[in-house]
Image (tube, rainbow, N blue to C red):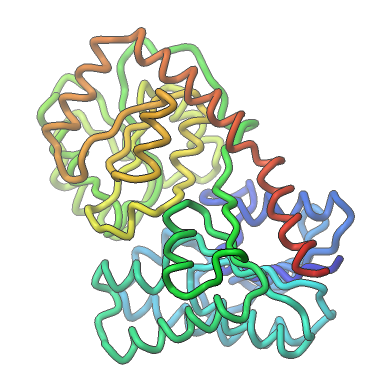
Length: 379
């Protein structure tokens, strides 16, 4: 089977960020399939048997994209849609097209290639667009909102299958008009090889690793650190709000990174007592399936989440961490102080987190599930 894989932010293990497309693609190749990856970047290359076709003029780094202005970001997304369409139409003929969003503009090359090659599309939804940028205030024009929702409906309607990365995303896809029977749940995976349980650190340390943009409620982490001045916090990453957060942070907050290799993220998780997965108090963000959460599970560390929904259910029902309300710095400080005073609970949550990662979020199992969806669509 020949797979045309469309993803603007394709990252291998040599980079930092979500490697889902790389990990899935190399497993598809190992299973005997051909994979042609169209992504942002320059030129042609190959990695682990994956043919990589780069499209110039668009962001290839997700953190850089989030650090840009809304207008710059939307323009870059449009450029990728145009360039990826040209690449997708150049051949060879695919048996199935696997398009992953965001950005939603990936629908343009996916639908164009489907018409050109008479091939089925599997459309993957990592975040609910355009609902996310609308609720975040990045897409304010009523005309642009109507156009984006029309593109969303067209992508869902014309796709043979739709993959959602969380139950909330799956429900949102159905609410937007997709037939329930063609929507599959394939969540993000835990990196069980790179992130591994380590001995409990001597000092109680709280960490965050990931994007520091508008969607991440790191102000609460800064204020919580101010309330517990004897507890060290380490925040790793980059984004639009990093400089502002660093200026307002108390002395017990250390900003590091952005990491140059994902091994640095794994090392930070290993020396942490608890890891934060925080978002702004915006309803659509509760549907997210964030990589940092599953990497925390793989590292065998308690996950502190602030979204009331699937993320809260995962940590509370599996005893793998704790929930605090979004934006509530006092509640976050109290919860972290309680965990510091109960090291046996920290160890128990960490064991449960690793067990959850192995049981539910093993990458081999999830890649096989995605491949089954592609094979079914191709048939």
